[in-house]
Length: 249
Image (cartoon, rainbow, N blue to C red; front, side, top):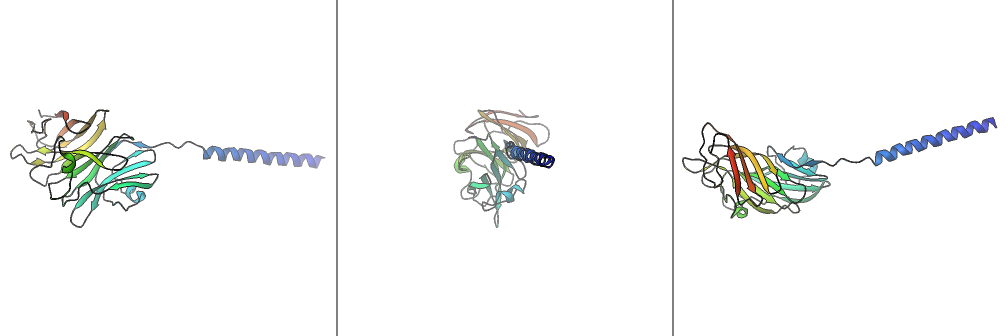
């Protein structure tokens, strides 16, 4: 009887251990996973192609926006003699869509910024260094705030594009650049920040001589460039509703 009692206690101890271990394993398996959210990302353009995996693109540390397990990346595809912008979306690591046809001319176009509210509002920021024959963002910019790169070439202008996050199609776009006051040619503008207030897209950046006002003409500025520049656009990119730049009016 004494032996049997010890044996019962032994097996009871094993059962209790199994229950505790089982509870621990169950708890670990059902621990909540924190969803990641990145609404805006602007940085140096990186190169990748539509054939690259998400792991390959992620390792480039380029601009990306994230909502849960959905991720959108922007960059450029290096061709033999120029660059074309590329934008790609992955859902759970599986490619949902990839667009490398926004600009396919001989211009050195890149993508270097994104804003996404995680639902229906997605904007991309791209660069342009001139106008070349072929398809570029002009076909999306007709009737918007600034419909083309303008005259000249070389200085890096920005392009803001409203994109359908479900398929990557550009809905519309506007060029965003500075204007040289002496000859009216296009000058450089670098976007550094994007935000969305539900009605307007707020864009902050650096403008070289000289920033444009709401009517696209040159502002009157003093001091040296680049100027810190803030502009607000209506969501459809037809109108710039406000603008400010230090030492400019």
